[in-house]
Length: 290
Image (cartoon, rainbow, N blue to C red; front, side, top):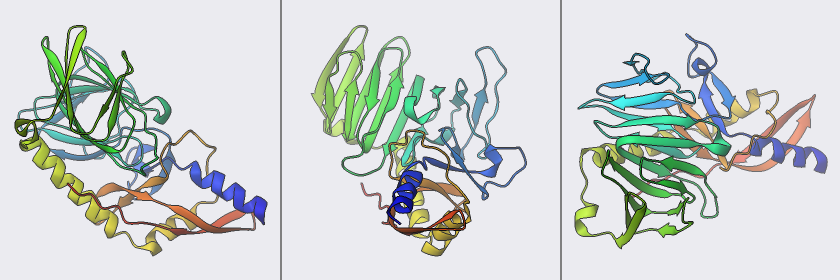
C-alpha cells in the first residue's frame, strides 16, 4: 500500500503540462488532453499576430490553436496581443508592436528572447515554488525565480527596462536579486536599480488586457468542477516519467472558456487497481488579484 502511494506521488509530480490533442496531430480537438513537457501553447490572441519558424522565413498568421516550437519567432501588429503558456501556472502576454523568439521550450531550460516591444509575465504557484523562466533581450539576461507579475520593455538599440511589480528576478550576469517594487534599466554593459514611481504603476492597453486575461483564466479555473478534473485523472492509464516540473499542478483545458487554466493539485489518497492508479485529489481555487 505504501509503495503504491509513493509511486502515485512520484507519478503525479511528473505532470508538468496538459495540452489539447491538437498539439500531437493537426485536426485533433484541443479538449482531448495530452501530457507534454514543453511550453509554447497559444492561449489567446487579439488582433494581428504572426509567426515564422526560422530567421528569413515568411511570416504566417498565428492561430489560437497553434503551438510554438523552439526557435519560432512571434510578432504582434499595431493591434496585436497574444498570450502563451509557459511552465504550468505562468503566462507570457505580448503587447502591440512586439517580437519575441521562443528560444527553448523545455520546462527545465525555458527561455524567451524579447527582441523588441513589451512582454508581461504572470507567474503563479506556492510561496516556496522555484521557477526558472529565462528572459533575454539585446541588453540583458534575467531569470524569473518566484511567482509574481513582471514587465519587460525593449527599445532596440537603446535599453531594456524590467519592472518587478511582485516577485523576484535574478540578473544572470551579476547574480543581483531584484525584488518586488523595483525597476531596472539596462543600457550597454551597465544597469541601474530604482524604486517604482507612480508613473511606473500606470496601466496601458497591454496591462489592461493582461489583467482581463488574468481574470478570465481565474474564472475558468473556478468553473472547473471536481468531477471534470477527477474524470481526466481517472482516464489516464499511466503517467509519463518525470521531466523536472517545478510546479505543483497542471494545465487544464476549460471548454467553456476555450482556454487553458492552471490547477494546483494535492494528492490525498491513492490505490492501485488492475495496473492502473486511481487518485482522489484536493484542489484549491486559483484566485488572481491585483
